[in-house]
Amino acid sequence: MKIVVLGAGAWGTAIAISGASHAAGHAVTLWARDAQQAAAMQAARHNQRYLPGLAFPPALQVLAGDACALAADADLVIIGTPMAALRGMLQRLKDCGAPIAWLCKGFEAGTGLMAHEVCAEVAPQLVSGAFSGPSFAQEVARAQPTALVAASRHARVREALVAGFHGPALRVYASEDIVGVEVGGAVKNVLAIATGLCDGLQLGLNARAALITRGLAEMTRLGLALGARTDTFMGLSGLGDLVLTATGELSRNRRVGLLLAEGQSLQQAVDSLGHVAEGVYSARTVVQRARAAGVEMPIAECVLALLDGRLRAAEAVVRLMEREPTVE
Image (cartoon, rainbow, N blue to C red; front, top):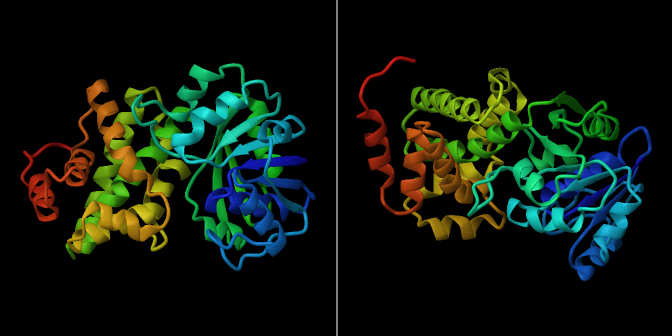
């Protein structure tokens, strides 16, 4: 297969490395927006900024230039941009005939749309889907065992993702429930901030377990209200991605919560990461979408209040613990 990955951040680079390392011998092109950055990566054979020291396989080439021209000759196109850039990239690719999948997770700021809803708005003719699940870029690039979900209503997209990436180190499971997969990918980042806060305040393992479990309930409620299937939230893109992002030391969203618990401001926490923490930007849209759907999400509400400066870390805990008793 000819695979084109658009976006040379950590996750886009990791997926490109994985595809180029595939036993089937895929030819992978990693597109970088900046020509100087592309030339530097092609010469050094690694991504010094995001994944230093992880060598590119011979089948991986890095280019800049016309992304649409590269995509026109591909068997599979992967969009590795942040959520904020997805709309523009889909508009540019609106005439692409190849299957397209995006890696970004979250709701679009301003509109509150999920990625597949953005695609339906700007390029409904595309055969597209999401490539998601519990995964840190560094581990995928190192070929450490990982399982992901190829989510799309189009069998052609699911089949292309399985053919492109399923192998000894990366298992790819197909799903038609793109709503559930994308809700899980968006909400887990917000809940990871809450879990980092919980651990940073040293509230204990009982509190962490309760927070993750009740967070999963919030995620599921929202997903069902938006048309998802319950079983999706018990799988890789629901429970799996939530546990990884909430507890893994490589999680940027968890790190934000830890830093806020230390007393850092949100700006200080974000500046110290050097990467995007999607939960910081997703919290508002998750809460807005939940309110519009009439879904109660108290943990997400507390995270948003904390990020907005309306609530201090310790106060968030008190607010959650003082809620009226209810049934599970």
